Amino acid sequence: MAEGLLIVGEDVCAEVVSSADAFTAVEAVFGAMAKGDAYNFPVIREAIGYADALYGFKSGFDKAGKTLGVKSGGYWPGNMDKGLTNHQSTIFLFDPDTGMLQALVGGNYLTAVRTAASSSVSIAHLARKDAKVLGMVGAGHQSTFQLRAAAQQRDFEKVVAWNPHPEMLPRLGAVAAELGLAFEAVTQEELGAQSDVIITITSAFEPLLMKGWIKPGTHIACMGTDTKGKQEIDPEIFTTATAFADEIAQSTTIGEAQHAIASGLIGKTEITPIGAVINGDHPGRSAVDEITLFDGTGVGLQDLAVASVAAEQAEKQGKATRVAL
Image (tube, rainbow, N blue to C red; front, side, top):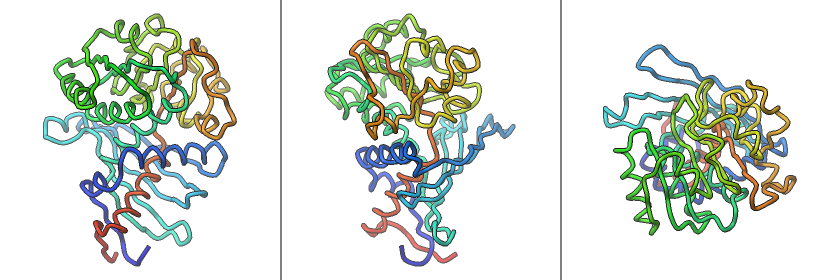
């Protein structure tokens, strides 16, 4: 890149990075991680004791993609009342050859699109090819990104959804209608009974789906648990599902698997990196009635990968700003 700091705002990120771009970037990063060509640094994520906010840092280095950086941000639960998204973040990219700051990239849109890309990568590689019903647990800001990305991976015919605040469900219904999919608001148990693929995307601290509600052959993408104590599903599901994760270290400490591990229901060796499936080193789903589970904790390398795409495309299209530090 040219000299100076490249600044890519939120609006520009949305213009230059599509869900397909995010899918390609995230899939490549997961594959690089499994090969040992990319690694994440330890995550810092803490309650700051103000505004009920969680704040932290995710960072890493992708040697294959030559991407180095950090995402700083967190979760402010009161933001919706202020007309803002609850998740707020910014991504910093550095030159791995010199350590100089290369780009400052808005992280809110990219966080949503890369999280959706993560679950859609798991659907592409693990869900049954004949999956027809998509279950959505959660109807917050990121749920619409999840729904759009998932719809690109299978020929779904119907979306069933549940949210602790049912008045938020129409936003998912509108997206389903836009995609030409039938939509139904259901109970959690009904959602499990109907769904071939389930995406959980909430900020819950208790199980929202129980083991007995999940039918054989379902693929579950758990996308909301990314902090110690958070939880979206019954840990017992891990005893019947074949488990995969973006990164095992995060999955077992801050992801959905933390509860199954703490209860002694499974061991760390029973979770496989999704990158191993992408690289062809693991077969993924082995039977039509197998329950597969993806624990998507959200790794820093995902953010850096999509931010790198945003910076490159914004500069190429003349939509970024350069300043001298």
